[in-house]
Structure formats: C-alpha cells, structure tokens
Length: 590
Image 1 (cartoon, rainbow, N blue to C red):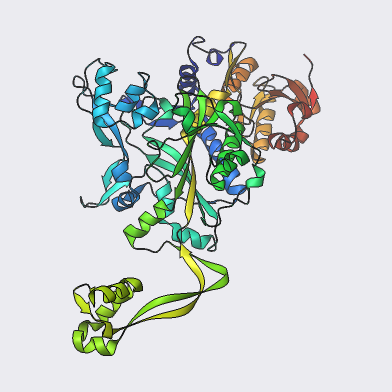
Image 2 (cartoon, rainbow, N blue to C red):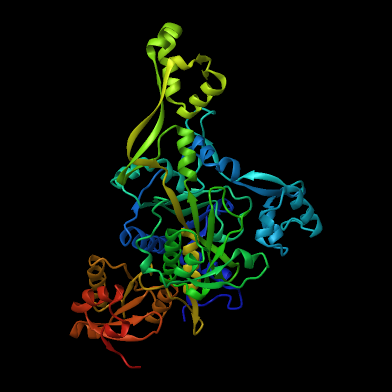
C-alpha cells in the first residue's frame, strides 16, 4: 500500500490527522512557512482551492440560482466613516491580556472558556470581572506559564490609511455586509425598485484576532458570505415558506442555556414561528436553507443545531440572532453560520451619517385622505423685517414640523427659527386636506452569514474516514475537488496514449478529470481515495480491443465496465444525481 495513503497517526485526533493530510496532499497549510509563519493566515493548495470553490458554488446554487438572490463584489478596504457609522469602531472590541514574561497576547474570554467558564458568561464580563476570574482560576500564559497583566479592550479591525494622508483612516472590512448596505440605493434600482430582494457577497474579510489557535476555525484573513435580505416590515410574509414549513430545526433556546443545559428543542419551522421563537418568517426560511446546505456538504442533520444568542451575546445591530453550529472532533460545537434580524439598523445609521436618503416609496392600494397642519411663510411680512435673510428664514421653517411652530406660537407668542424670531402675523398656520398616495420607509433586513473557511473545514472533517487502514475522503459527489481520475494500467503499449485521450474527452465535457500514471494501479487508487476523487477510470488491454473501461467507486470500491462512447452521457447523469454508481454500467463481480 502507498505510504501516502496511510493514516500516519491512527491514534491521533481527527483534527491533527486532517491537518497532516491537508499539508501533504495540498488542501491547505499555514502561510509564510519559509519565514516561520504568521498565525491566522492559511494558504489553500490545488485540491483545497477546488474544494473551497465547490463549497462556495453550493452557496451560489442554493441562493443565487434557485432563489434569485443578487450577487455583488466590492472592496475589502473601506473608509473609516463607514465603520464609524455602522458602530463597528465602537463595538468590535475583545478582552485581551498580555503575558508579563513573554509578552504574548491572548483573548481573555477564550482562556476562561478553557477553564470551564461558558462562552455566554465570559462574553458579558467587564474587564474587572475578567481580571478577578483569571486570578481565581490561576490562568497563566499557555506558552511560558507567565502571569498576565491588566485586561484591556482591543479593536479587532485592521486599520490602515488610504493614500498618503495619515488623516484618511480606512479599515479592512470585518464582514462583507456593510458594502451591501452602503450600496443599497444602487442595488434597489437593480432590483427594479421592488421589495423583497436580497444580495449576497462572497469575499475576503479581515479580523485582527488576538490569538488565533484553531486552524481554519479562527483566521485573521478569511472568506465570508454575507447575505442581506431586504423586506417591508409591514409585509413580512415569506412567499417561499411553504418549501420549508415542515423542516425540523434543533434549537438550543436561551432559557435552556441559562440553566447550563445543552438539550435542544426540535421544532418545525412553522412551530418555531407560531411560538414566536423565531420572529421573522424570512429568518426562519434562511435557517432551514442553511441546514439543508450543510446536509448537501455532507454534515448530517443530527450533527447540526441552532443556538439562540443571549441578549449580551448579540451583535450591536441585531434584535434577534441564532448561530448554526456543527459538532467537530477537536473543538466540539463550532459556529458555521450566523442568522441575525438586523431590522433597519444599518440603513438608518448610514442614512444619518451620510445624509443620503435610503428610504423606499410604497404606494397605497387605496389613497388615504389626511388632514395636515401646514405652516406657510408670508414673504410680504418676512421680507421687510429680515431683508435678504427672509428666504433663509422661510427655508428653516419648512424643515420644522408644523405642530412645533404652532405650539410655540400659542405658548410663547413667537417661534425661534435659529436666531430669527418669527411672529404669528408672519406665517399662515392652517389645516389642509391632502390625498396621500403612499409612504416612504426604511426596509428591514435579515442576514444569514456563512464562514466559507469553516464550511470548508467541516466538509473536510465529515468526509474524512479510514477504510482498511486507508484514508478515504468521501465528499458528496457534487463537491469532490476531482470528479474523475484516469489511469492507464501500464504506461506503455499505447495504454497511456488512450488514457490521455479519455482524459481530454472528459475535460472537454466539463468534468474535473485528472491523469495519473505514476506507480502501481493500487497506489494510484489509494492516492485518489485520500484526495477524494469520486471515480477512477482505468484503461487496460481490453480497452484497446473493445473500447470499454473500468470505473471504480471511491467509497464502495466496486467496479463497473462501460463503453468509452457512453462515458460523457452517463457521467453527466451520475454527477447530476440521476444515476447511482451501479447504474453506470455492468458490475464487475470480484
């Protein structure tokens, strides 16, 4: 058996085994290794890049193709005012402690979690409480055993300057959502000015993590998929809810968490909405779709759950949040997606900070007659008093609610428009009947947000298995980084030439097909299994006589015989899920 196909540490935990395999076979490895590396940065190799692209293609297939969500792409660096308006500059801070001996810095809440304090408790602690708990539990530096100094808050956004001006502050985006919000007006136009609509952005984000120590689970540069779905809060019904009404969501409720219990409550989407556990139909819909996405990536429903965020755990922009978590070997339950009801928080913040109108107009089905109080400046009276400033006074009055002016006139006998005193005889205050044909409002938003690198990792872990001392990566067929391996039985007698012809045929048909003639056929099968190659096609001497080939299945190791001329059509049906392996051709009995 090939040495590269064996699990080098059968007794090691899966996380270690996967990381060793990932480095050796080119899935991923720590970046900048020749310079000693830098924590929180990872490089995806040839196999990893393909797998990651396939995982992200699943996101696009589910949301962009099937649901009709728009997609956009924008810059990773944004002006500081964007994140000042959104609240990230004030809120994107984590508790940090520094070792007084080696001066290594760590996230204090993570150190406390390792001592048995729940993440919920650690997240709500003040810095003084963090200090007390570190001393009480005797927490010391994991690297050198030194004592920690005073805890402090640390901004986990990368800060830079845009251009040569030190005053032009910029930040690396910690999420892709704000790009969508600041471009809302353009996107609303692209959506033909109709609600509801959604937009997804899949791209790099940056978080200057204090002490990333969990491989792909916590990175400083990572890929995020943020989907912002905009809707009218007065028309919140989800027209796609019927597709997921009976989908069961295992939810770890707040009230259960506060009892320090891990028992989930299984609720259908409809039950969760009827019981008001999930407040938005659209949020419930996207949670159900997120569950289905993970199943398609190979994670069983029984290994997934949604955890309801406690009040102090929620992001500053969220009125209700759930994290989708997956059970992994080393770290236990880890978040792979977050689901937040952001209301109109973000659009309101950017509208206020920028001065740009981000409301949308909704026409009423039936016009409404309203009686409104109006204040009209009498320019013939204002002009002689304020001369050239009369127009300025009139403009100031136009921006003030009419009722405010009327109340001031009644109580004080005049109204102060800035530094200008306006008297009753200088304005006409009256009630007028108007026909209101519509209204303007700020849309509400629900957000499913996926960590692409985390989806990649859980896909890899759930695909990882060992069969007869051989590592096998059993990816779902739709995301296998290499769909087909093509192997000549021998690298001579024309078998290699024929194998290359078959490989080119399949590549031209759109399959990810790899040619391999190195080593024995057994070694090539073993290499393919640990790379997750779905099917292996072997060209042998019978191929030269009758034009048939052997296809080997990665997971069952079964083999079938099929004519080369039938390969493209049959393989297309197989990878589309229309045929099982046994239906591809004639089973070879062993």
